[in-house]
Length: 156
Image (tube, rainbow, N blue to C red; front, side, top):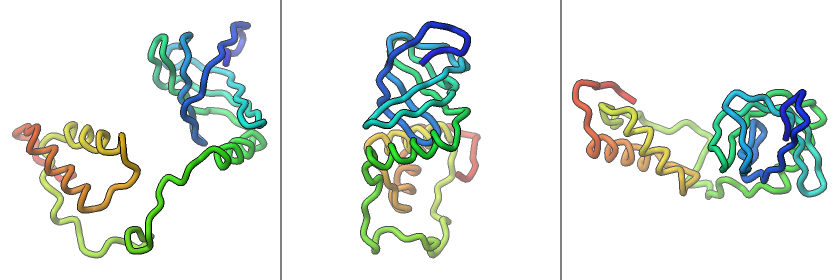
């Protein structure tokens, strides 16, 4: 990685990558908003792109959003992701469906603390990849009991 126009290059370990960006572990980090020229090589595939630092943890790593990538490099990235990705969800036909859920979400609790609801959902997904409607409602209800914030009634 390097900033365009600068000769300083930084080596880093990519610990997470998608079509839209990556997280790199590096002791030399850049500030949020910094544009970087990135060359990624893995499994014999080389990808070149530009990215913008979206989050930076000094001496630990950075989250980078890809901003400019040729179609050829995007194709290489898709190929690479196919070789390194695990299926994100494996379910039986009775558990997941592309059909709309029958019924309504009338049971959605009043959200008085939206921050607590979001934190609870983020915490849920830290170790899981799928959320059923019933589990979603349970997480929301629990988040509102744990952190009530009176006077902010709204539906989630």
